[in-house]
Length: 311
Length: 313
Image (cartoon, rainbow over all chains, first blue to last red; front, side, top):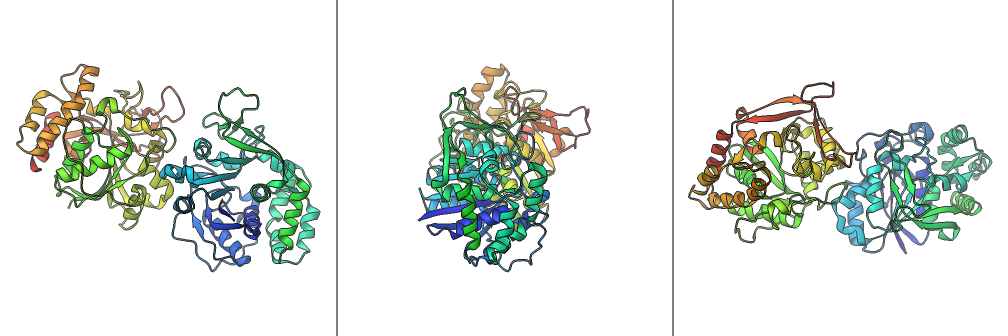
């Protein structure tokens, strides 16, 4: 059995990623920790609760975390996912309530109670995890791994020219996590762009399944699909958060990965939040991340299909 | 009415004097707790030192918490070269018996502030600002509960004491200082520009040594130890005495002078990391976020220190 916490800024793709982990039969989810990011913070918390209610898993706690990054300036991206993160579906408010415990403490407590077993899937800016590592650095050896969806391979950005959103929102937090010494696997944006695409036709097919998850998928991804077509010019959408959970859940689908040294630019007029990978061995540092360069796209789409078909 | 304060500190000799002064003045300070930081020395020492001090003062009613063991965003820089290996070198205080509180210092700050009305607590800061910044990021709603942050930190005209351009408390955690300086909370900064005018001359230390109590002898011993480094460095007749400016300002603001200005901290440059850039001449229209103190009546300052230390056992 594997033991996860999912740290997320719950918009459409995050919600679907959460469902994929919850469905995975050899995994236990010990909490959803919410970080500032995609949309309004309180709406993200509601989205997490709504998602858990939808799949009948209100036994999983939602822990609200940091409402702002360390530099306390960022912007959310309602244009990508809709103002509510769910393509303006404006679902009724969930009945369940979030936990009183702060996400930072939920992470610390999980690490302490499951030494060597806790795996953190990070689908959002890394503020909560960075604060946990600063508040209680003694948990570092207790964390089995962090699986982060973020950063870039070749500085192809999605929020600035060179920066990926989850790093750009809180570069200092990313820097803390990259230097922490916790085993860290990163699925960068270009890998998602290459291998985490579903087409419009597949989305429509999923919508016709008539299952609760299929209908939910179809309803909440509408804005993402139209936005992605507009910005990336592709027939479909990039499911970066779903690939963020596919990598830890289905490692057999990984086609190419490498242990490398990665760091993040914190200054710079144009380059704040850009990540650098030592492709040619110039930095003189030992590898600190495992970078996922490719996964099997057909298998990826099959996992999405299977998730949505589950009733 | 005494002011409700949370003391954030990394004692350290001069911080120890500041804490003792606060413990000696219950008519001015209702100390909700002491949150210890990593700074002058490691957290293992600072939390123990704070407990030694409350025992020395007979104030074991004040809870002591341990905060973060390291700064937010860099490796810990310490100053054993100034303060000695334990931080209270120069004294012979016994190992403390009073226990450390179990709650994390960051959570103590958040929990305490949330229980109190808006604008009711003053933060009394003697150290790097890690714990306060962590609390503000973790729980931004607490900002309105803080009436004022009075901090020994920063420098402008006197530039640096740990690098050529940075004062120690800021330099240890510039990111934390940046978070606090941008928080919108009213702030008073007691920088090197004032502490370098408050020298612990032999006569002043002698007066404290001869107060006739254990606390007086302890303070004199502590300051004689820590001033050794500064006397060598500056070649002055006494060492700057930083920490006590915080309680002294809160008790007797009229003996200090300064102006309301913008203070911003450098967080990017390797060369000038942690420099506090003070818009002293109001060249910009940046928000005037800090009352920046540059003047003090040094005789009145040392008189107040002696008076308060003299009250203790």
